[in-house]
Length: 500
Image (cartoon, rainbow, N blue to C red; front, side, top):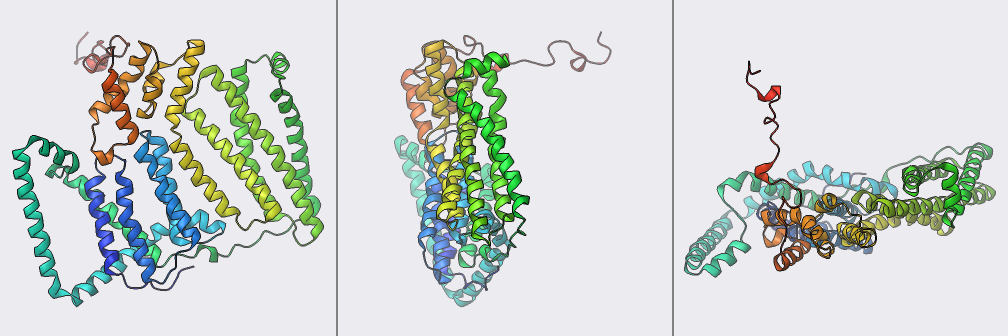
């Protein structure tokens, strides 16, 4: 699996690594936004320079993964919600690892991120040897470079300070564009400098000499007798068929009969079954994987039987997916949409897509299945982030309030700035009470341009134009001065010794 020693590190690679570290120190200390894409740009260049020096060619799938990783970093630049941002960043790291390693099988898809951590130690030694060799070869040229950079920095600082003192507008412009580099920020900036430095080194070292995960030897499972593997799956198919017969009756309007027999409400019926059906979908994928490992493959009749049994199981599982989504729809009608509910519904839809991909692999071959699953996961994370789940949650709850006068203001107040355009359509006092906490967070966290998402900027514009018409007291929210004091009620832990 391990390749030969990488080519010596080149000067463009070193400069790109240094640029990544400096940009990380300057831009990553105040939040997440456009700064991630800015920091990622020189890291991508470092990987490109290292791969070219190693003689690696740009392949179509490498370009697909690289573009996908950069596209995922657009989510924090556009959206304010932290949970889609976290998922997008993790997915971007995963597809970046695929772009650096290559490979087409399951080992590459699942284990490529491990290769980035493997490159941390070897990459540091690789860069150190390159720096030492270049310093020995060009010792006399470092002096002019250092003097040039120092003179340019001094001129920028001196004349920038003079112009800022001469014009308040120019001072405000500089304050918005230039990060805070005060002494109190030094430990924090140093941490991000090291993060960017070693991250870029790991990326460049992996691009120069990646681990070949597809060379990992995976022994095929021992084929079982036809009856030994087929009978349990046939019994499972019969169970799925019986369950789906009930679900189809429910899906086509048989709720009243089912609910009258069980004594449950719509919401209780939905809540009772969704999580079980989600788990059943996950376990079905495990069953399919184990069956493909142990099913006999030598005889054409065995291969036909495998496709028939597992294809039937996949079709029946799709009905389970539809039933789970229908139950979630009932649950949302009763209680409204939340972050958790929209997340698990999106996951259930992606699992249904994976089952469709497995069915396609059974017909056309499984050669592209690992990459197809990885593409579907990355594309799903990208669409999920760009769709703005918080905005969808707010939109659904606003519509629900319009039709039923039911709304959970404290929950909506905890959403991100993505929800502001939808919440802004509520009537008063619900509008101001729902936006009060969001407005406070935005006012206290007035970050720099590179750490502010488009949703935050849009929310600030809306709140500035229309304002808030209610105070925290009018919304039933205690102000910070009136927050509960646990020692004010005279309990034992608030009294001195001997107080009655």
